Amino acid sequence: MNFDELISLLKNDIRIFWSWGVPSKSFVVDKINYPTMVRFTVNGHHHKGHVYIFLNGSDLFDVFLTTSQGKIKNRTDEMGLYFDQLVEWIDEMVERIPEYR
Image (cartoon, rainbow, N blue to C red; front, side):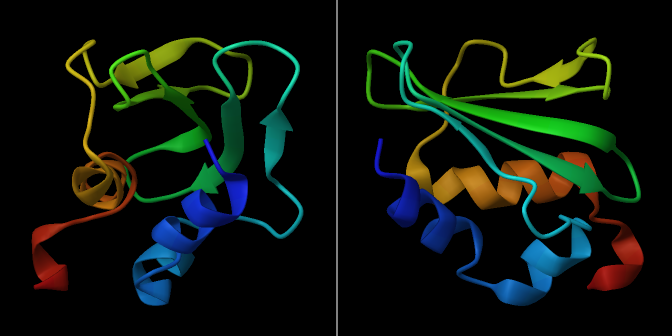
């Protein structure tokens, strides 16, 4: 997983990314363990805590939403997400409300 490409993907629509309330300097990257993991903090309408993104063996993304203490609140249910589904799924779980249409 290329960190710069992933961040570019997440920030492709910067308004959506900003709506998640991601503080600057909140990204943590694990390059030691496999699979590589990216974690960042969010402060959205539906979820406040951490978002973990892993690249699984099928080259799909597994995403976990946790509290700040690490309790899993939501996940992609082992189905994996393609790169073009990633931002939409995170936005749906973290921030999106019907009034944003």
